[in-house]
Structures are given as C-alpha cells and as structure tokens.
Length: 294
Ligand SMILES: C[S@@+](CC[C@H](N)C(=O)[O-])C[C@H]1O[C@@H](n2cnc3c(N)ncnc32)[C@H](O)[C@@H]1O
Image (cartoon, rainbow, N blue to C red; front, side, top):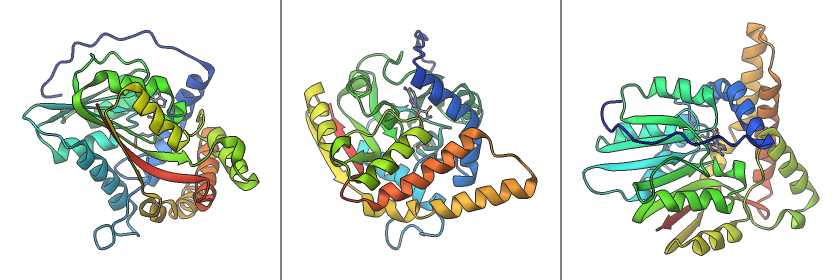
C-alpha cells in the first residue's frame, strides 16, 4: 500500500449459514480460478469483434474490467473506488494499473482471498478487507465509484447490498454491477432453466439471481437518480463457451498430477457447467451491466 490509510473500523461479522457456505467455498476453491484466469479474474468476459481474441480468455475477462471501469466515468485527482465482493482483487489490480490516480478498497468474506489478494496488491494502492458487503465499515458518501462483478448474486442482489453501495457512494457517483440475472421470477422458469438454476445456486452458494426488472426497481426505490440497464449476453457468450474446455483442462491437469479434486472444486465445476446450460436459455437468463447514478 503506498498511500491512503483508511480509518475504518472492523465491524462485527455476521455468520449466517449461507455466509459460512460462501466462505468455505471460496477458501477451498479460489485457487482453482488460476486455471480460469492467470490474472485471477473470477468472472466472465466481454467480447468485442476485432479487439478481444475469443480464444484468449483473459483478454475478454480484462475487457469486462475495462467496460465496468469506463462506466464509472471517474474524474478528479484523488478518486477512490470500492469493489464489493472483490475475489482475489483481479479487477482491483486491473483498475489500479490502468489508473494511477486511483485508490481501491475491496471487500470479501473469504479470509483466503484477503490474505492472498493483499499479497498481490502489495505494490498497488489498494487493500482488501474481510467484511460483508451489505454492512461495510466504509464511511457514508465517501466513494467515487462502487463496482460489484458477479458477487452481489451471492445475496440475490438484495436490497441490503444495493443500499450499502448507495450509502458509501458520493452524490453523483456511480455503482456499476456486472452479473447474470433472471428475466422472470424463479417460479416462471421452464423446467430446464429451473434445473440449471438450482444447480448453479447450489454449486456456487448463491442465494439466487436477482430478477432484472425487480433489481432495477429496487435501485430506483433506494434513491439512485438514474439507472441504466444494458443486456450484454451476446458479448459474454464467447467466454461462457470456454467453460467446457476449462473444466476438461482442469480435470486433466489434476489427474495428471495425481491431485484429488476437492468437494468445493466439484461444486465449482458443476456450477460452471450449469452456467453454460443456463446461458443457453436466453428467454430466462441474461447477463447485464447496470450503471446506477446516486
Ligand atoms: C465470483 S467471485 C467474484 C470476484 C470478483 N468480483 C471478480 O470478478 O473477480 C464472488 C466474490 O463475492 C464475494 N462475496 C460473496 N458474498 C459476499 C458478502 N456478503 N460480502 C462480501 N463479499 C462477498 C466472495 O467472497 C467472492 O470474493
């Protein structure tokens, strides 16, 4: 950490059963993501014809980071952005390398990610805290931007986590969310979608994906003055198509090394497979980037 000492107090951790599942999942399975992304991006990518190489996964994953960064529309000399559910800090490192005026705070539930992620951030202007993103110690009205990439789904994009994003943002600043959403309530999903949705939520310890129009309404109800919702499913699809190859590659590598596959790694592999199946049900699922201005 070069600058910015942050006067944050650590808050009481809430350990609901599902938070324990999330912690267990990420403490055990985070290392597997090295196979998905050498930059340790724990999300899908964004494909642009002629710019990103569809065969190079990390170029698409980092393009997703760039797309999220662009929508923050940061300005000013000293800006600070929070990453709610930051994983290993892949997005943080990408932003910080790209923007030398930026400082970042990431929060995650996983102690493994805090320890290893902070190691990787040693030379950068960022820090990862072990906190619940629905109840952070980040001061009110203090952030120039907030991002949440494939992390708020763990809480079903609920009111609490969205409200926390709103609370910590400065007026006029933006919260940008990149994630998969349902296009209709779970009860209205077709049988195939419901099956893959259940597998996805179980394998990745998700409370459930938000229903896109409900999440949009929730953001407006919280007080965001402007909410822009963009469906980017076709941009994300080429990276989703990497899933079967990544699964087979991961299994072969482990078999070759004689390494047993941990239960949480199986969960991760199964959920990845269900994400591919869900992605095919385009009437029920979509990948969206939401930009909400306070
Ligand atoms: C799929 S990973 C995405 C990580 C990162 N955003 C990225 O794109 O590389 C989901 C992350 O959300 C975090 N997470 C889930 N629920 C959380 C909560 N209630 N509070 C803080 N972090 C949470 C997990 O610990 C994990 O780091």
